Image 1: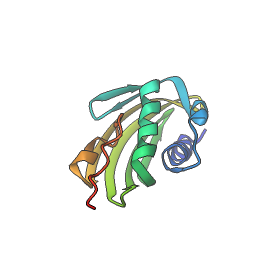
Image 2: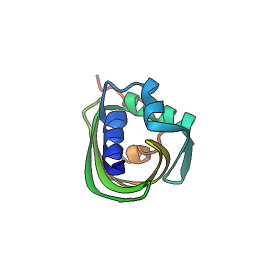
Image 3: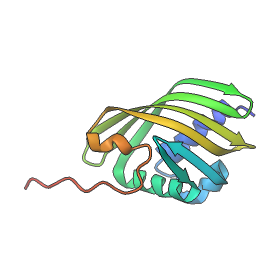
Image 4: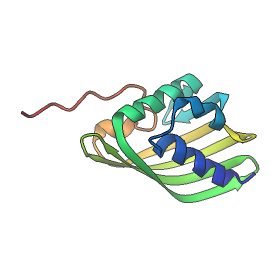
Length: 139
């Protein structure tokens, strides 16, 4: 299996594709999936919550893969995530992560996310579990 391609397909579908639905998670992730990100541990249920919150927080998102290195069933990725909030503000993060596959599905991720551009409140984008408060209206 080409795990580098599988990882790119997974992240682009799950994170960036507006047509993605949580019903597809079993296709991409093991039931006991765990993600360690920025000192947070997300089990499968928390990861699903994280994805829902990203959908609420972001209007759209793009991933640019800078480098991918594979060894066996593990892939290390350095990638940039560019996202736009619903208010039009842009966010950019640098991500370094080690992904482990079990068969065709991800079983574990160990990730560090660095905010390069955006508001300080967006620093938790890689592990966010609750939607940020709506910006104050200025009318």
